[in-house]
Amino acid sequence: MTAVETILEPLVARRLFASAEEAAQKLVRDYVLRQIISCRDRIVALEHKYGMDFGRFTQYTSERTALLRRSTDLLPEQRQSLARAVMQEEDDWLDWKATEELLQSWLGLQTEA
Amino acid sequence: MTSLPTLLGLITTRLQGSSLCQAVSAVETQEFSAEQFFCKVRADLEQELKLQVRVYCSRGHYDYSYQLFRDAPIMRWDNKEDCASLPNFPHHHHTPDGSIVSSPLSGEPEQDLPVVLQAIAAFAGPTLSARDTQE
Image (cartoon, rainbow over all chains, first blue to last red; front, side):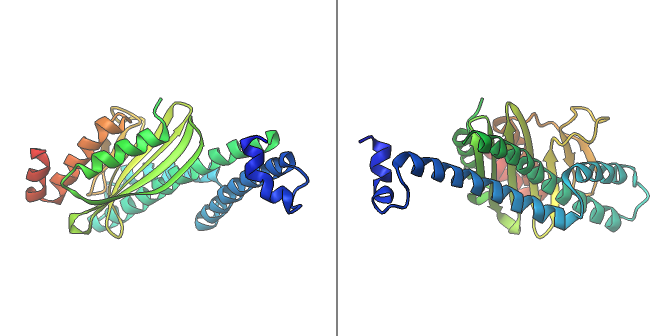
């Protein structure tokens, strides 16, 4: 019995899976699926927060940065308020970008697993 | 190419070695492969300041941000490709007064973290600044 078969044996013995091979395959698929769900949940939360998808949000954050850079006539408090919002948006943008790309990677792996 | 454990170790060690940082923790890591990963590290500083470091690596390309905040962002360094007219694009710095200016960072945490920590020390006050400069 291989090391992997030994690990999976308790599950096979209880007839949760027909074989170690089936157990390994289903557990791998389940792991990948959980990563996909985690990424999707995060993306949905960001879409809900900003009311747009990632492509539009990328454009929006660029427009907000450009607005901040040319808003030299704002009062100091107004400028700081806008600057803080832009920083928070850029922080969310990086989180969103990473999650979108990781989702695509997990989806690609799902077709292999 | 740097792996996630190496990068995480480098960031936390560098932060823990600074007199500015009281506590350092890896808030989040995500890894798809040795070439695609994400980490978020947060450091508690004096005066209720916090520094958050995010790095996303994807097949040799690094996106990063260093953000100083209390209840709201105060200043930030990142390489989001928005300010093409600035020298050293895409690296830029969001200053406490709301400006976006050129940044001396390079995207290499080992070189960038000392620059960020020194700027934070200067922002936080002369006492902290003097201590961090002595390191």
